[in-house]
Image (cartoon, rainbow, N blue to C red):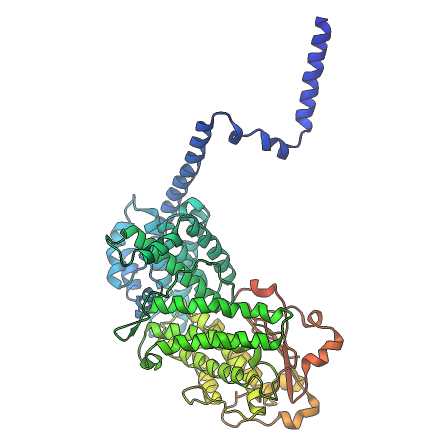
Length: 589
């Protein structure tokens, strides 16, 4: 009997070994792990200690690597001379406590961050600020080759700083799950925004906003609003959290408008109880909040245009958003809207974003054929907004220092506004509506000034890639519409407008005589033509045209008239970034 038990035991042991070898490891780990241990106190202790040890090790590694990147004092002194007024302007719009607002702020903190035991978050934020400022070049300096080499050196420095921050800080939720960590993350995103890495900005913004919600930043903002008129006043930490959440939401909204991304922050702070104008001065942060709340409705228009609802219903939504934007604009003093070319003010940035929103609001209808004038309000308002965008861009572009991180993004807005204005203006010509902006500047004059400044900025030794490609694309489009150039000979042109789509333009040869009529003011002015009767105007870059429509629909898409065009519809190309190798002028054949 004992032998049988022994045999049975040996067999059981052998069987268990076989089972142990054959059992799937991924299933076994569900039941055999420390989380299910009876010693719950040890488990909790391990969970609390494990991330802290990882965080400390990562912070130490980050501090060591960042200290190796620390520029010498004389370089910091030279860089500090480039802290332009625009950084102080941006601080008024999107305040960050770690952002140096002046040359003295940058220099005074050098001794602190160079200490061996310096706070890693403060060190990372300081270096990110230096990395951004270092890419600004003085307007008059060295030869073009010398400026280019100097900029490339500073760009490499900024890139390495961002890589260290991304690898050792942003990759750990426990490190960015603090006020200091979120500010470091926002400084990192600001650098990515300036380089045109929009998909990285958008993906990281969603993650950072989620973490900010977990650590209570939206609740802090709500508490500040609730306790605003109570005593004692809320603590300083609560104010910092609330301010950070407001800045985070504002960055989310501005990035969404400029990059045409859906906003991630759904618990946006309310600006209803905050005065927009104090002593005649518009409050930039309140204006951004009010504007960003409208921006979410503008983005919803893209979805409405794809749904099976009537055009009348979509148009009512457009008019509703347009009315809200006009009401917001009317709350500001009239003088605030008068652009002064020699001044650098937050108003320039806010007004640019405002008119980009107006342009996008009317984009769906301003690009359609509308011989009966049913959508004349949208077409005229959209054209006026395009001109306003171009005029604000001209003011900002002349004021921004060489290499400033916003240059590429606002160049893209100017390119988009110019292309849209040239395409949509034919509708106004057919219905004999005046092509003027609200201040009386003609469309042709506005486009001519834009082309002239693009030509100037395209020669800059740094930060000119978007301006150079935009200039080439606009001139090619204008030349084709005037019956000039290679595109005109082939009768076909394809442009890519980031965040808008690939635009196919074709000359209808049966209407050549009618199509060659043009304005005589500037070589770049486009001959205007009716758009297609059905056109995909979602602000997302599209897929291949042959796949987008079938052959029976192609003629309807091309439409009739001297020129016709359509925008492809592709919901996946939003992931395409603005990069130096992105070609705006895709084809002329």
